[in-house]
Image (cartoon, rainbow, N blue to C red; front, top):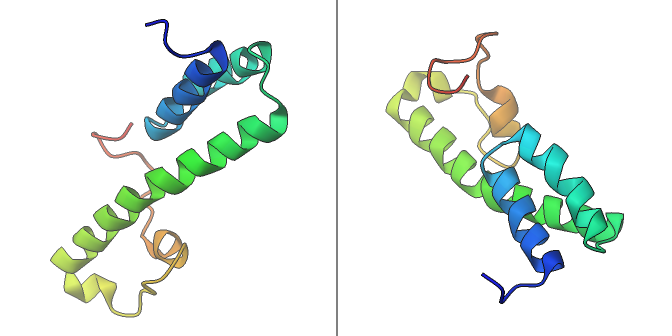
Length: 98
């Protein structure tokens, strides 16, 4: 695994950490990315891009869930970030998501 530079490896690691919602991974890889020579601007861009990528399946999951329970989707806005804000909060993590 020597075909990527340390900078490229850290960019991949940041994307994977964001995609897996792993806070300890982010906390580890941001300093490592800096050590590899990435600027905070480059790190921020990578993080924002990874977040945009991971939001696509998150929106699709929300859409699928709301379609399965149509009465709860009445009045719920279905564009942009408003959908996530309209999702009910239980105040506790579900068994699969804790």
